[in-house]
Length: 220
Ligand code: IYR
Image (cartoon, rainbow, N blue to C red):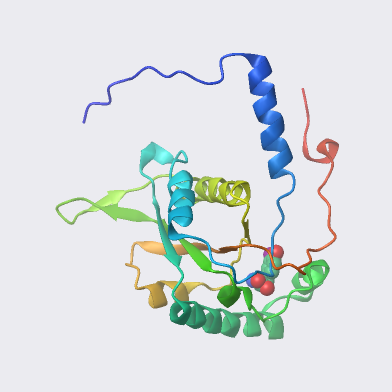
């Protein structure tokens, strides 16, 4: 297939306007936190659709868009997911995780219980498509799948926050139960499970901080 080039106008065109926009973006994103306690207040399907569309605008290897998003508000399906996730988490906290890992998790005060999987009005499960199918049913390759889906998830997390909502990058391990419950095909693997909703009114977050710019960068 031909790939005709089209003009691209980057925006904004002046640096003062650009700096203003960046400052707004920086201010907004700097208040993002991983949230584990959710209000049961509803979020519209249209809002979730807009967030997923934005995530899917992310760059990907050869523009293959090797992702699939399943958004769940059905209470019965959320309950099934919670029960299956808690089963895995019980095994994790009950001996599967190393002492070092459990020690590293202490600041987050987590345990096997995952009420957010039912409290949050929506769960979004992101699947990675290791390969795809051509129209004739033969296999089609995807490229840099891990990187591409990771970038799309970054877009999604930022978009959720910009929409005034909260989320958590939840990865119960292993996540195979999500493929079964949601009936996803063999070429897809669960990548991330994100509860989406408003933070609970009396909710708290861990008292943690980020490394300094000096620690995480070099300028040469
Ligand atoms: N999946 C478990 C454990 C866990 C692991 C990491 I790494 C975290 O940053 C947080 C939790 C859980 O969700 O409790």
